[in-house]
Image 1 (tube, rainbow, N blue to C red):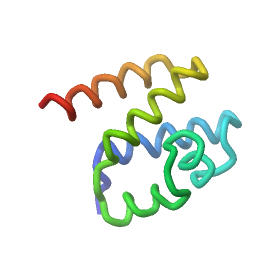
Image 2 (tube, rainbow, N blue to C red):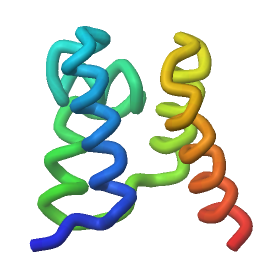
Image 3 (cartoon, one colour):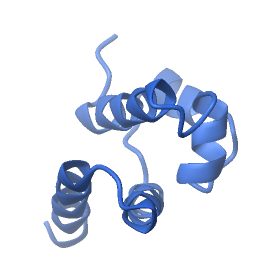
Length: 86
């Protein structure tokens, strides 16, 4: 099963944060960066659904607050804009 590109993007960001020690696991990422249930990434992977706009916005705001990954922030900003106004 091929994952939705937005889901794949979120998982890539999560793996980057884990690799750099910002979070300990995908569950920790879900709680701290997405403000969601720790199992949300498993759910969106299993059901192959797009992450919600609030989830994308929470991630954008947290990265912005921590002043990390400016390129990822730009991509998230575009993605949120496209999903909101397209």
